[in-house]
Structures are given as structure tokens and as C-alpha cells.
Image (cartoon, rainbow, N blue to C red; front, side, top):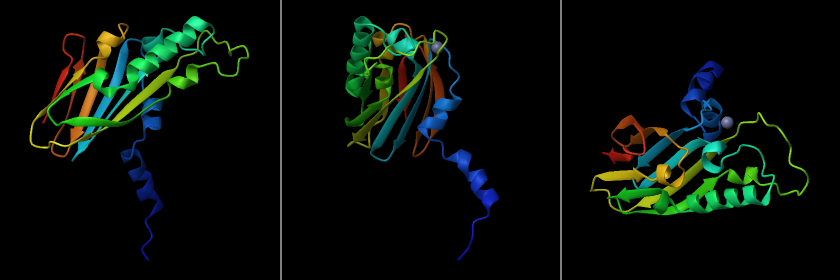
Amino acid sequence: MRIIPFTLLLFMAPMMPTTGEAAANHAHQHGVAQMELIKLDRDLQITFLVTAADLVGFEHQAQSLQQQQRIEQAEMLLAEGGKVFSITGGECTQISQQSNLHQLHNDTGAAAKQNEHQHTDLTVSYQFKCTNLTTQMSVEVRLFALFSALQKIETSWITDTTQSSATLTATTNRLQIE
Ligand SMILES: [Zn+2]
């Protein structure tokens, strides 16, 4: 049996990023989100990292009914990938969605931990299955219309054949994916 040298494992580790590591490296900047699209064969995954301030207007646990409702509203807006993204070509259907907005809920009923200087990053990700691999795909990102605090989204994408990046804004919100 061949033993892989430990140093090689160390070298390989940064090449296998997880969402958690990406979140840790995310420069917390209000108004600026980061998004990653991975399209391999029939699978399309879209993940974005955004500050809680941009989605709900605060970054601590909800302290009032009004704030609870803002979280629920954001969760509702983000639940359907088909409303967050308008995907043309590919015939893609959402198969799952995850987000960690729930951490903003104050479920215990106890007084929320108070920290006015707290900052919170949120991650939202979508998995789609695409049945048409022959057409070119474009993705219109509607987050700017849904969350007006967002000013730009630094986006990168990877497909079977290409990788690229772009900065999206409210007026330039469409990605052409090879
Ligand atoms: Zn913040």
C-alpha cells in the first residue's frame, strides 16, 4: 500500500474548498455579495454569501416581532430559485435549497444575545438539475430587485469547459454561461 505523504495532503486541502471555508474567507462588506456557480454536466449549483444586513437589515438575533417577520419574509423570497434566478436555456429545475437564515431567529424566547457590533454572514445555496445540455445558458440574477441594499455581486463560475468571473450590479445582472 502506498502512503500519501502528509505534506501532499496539506497541499491538497486548499483545493477542496467547502462553503464554510468560503464563508470564513468572505470579506464582510455591506452591499457586496459573493456568488459562485458550478455547472457540471446536468448539475447546476449556485451559492451566494451575503451579509445579514443586506437581507434583513440587521445582523443580530431578532429582537422583535417585526424583525422575526423580516427574516421569514427573506426566507420566503429566497426559497424558490426560479424567482431568485431567471435561467434561460438548460431547462433547469430546482431540486434543493439551503440557507442559514434560521440562525437569526430567536427561538428560545429568552432575551437575544445583544451585541451591537456583531456582523453575520449568510450563505444561501441552490441545486438545480438541467435536462438540456445543448443550448447555451444565461442566468439573470434578481437579488438586486428582491433586496435593495445589495449593490454588487462578485460572481465566479465554473463549467465542464470554462471558468470566468464578473461583477454584477442592478443594471448588469445577467450571466452568459458557456
Ligand atoms: Zn455587518
